[in-house]
Length: 229
Image (cartoon, rainbow, N blue to C red):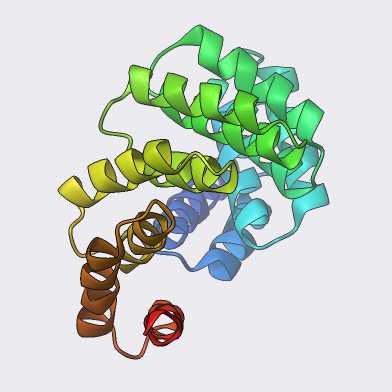
């Protein structure tokens, strides 16, 4: 094997190993491997996107943003890189720029449609546009009715808007699919009490105490139960 072939093989091995560690949540090891295997001058958009993911997961947000921008400069149609750039912008609280990225991904359709709408909803909330956030959550659920994070988030937004019936419906739908979710049990109980259903509220908050007695949610549930006595 020629020296160049050996070099390419080593690079490919580092890339595969980096992807393996990234998938398993070892972001620092993945970043070390991918940074060595994928240079800033790479013309492989997918490779750059993977390195950007490792940088983002390691909280190197400015570097990740540069890497995703490089990926899109060499492969403008790479929706994964555009979506990930939106996530970085969201983390940097650049909400309007993030919204623009998620808008493009959403309009293109495909597997990222619901996640793009969901993250657009987060950006809208960050900009203080709660009703717009609700609309984007509705779009996420229309694109994928099984995209359950949108249900939980929708409940929290409606709760903040004092739309108790709508909040309760969202939490109830989430609990139908995730009956052991202590977050949803807690929030549904609190909303039920605010809507004038104290016995229902106590029932759900007691379930929080039973299912996760040492959790922060249990502390919160117990606080309300004591307060309502």
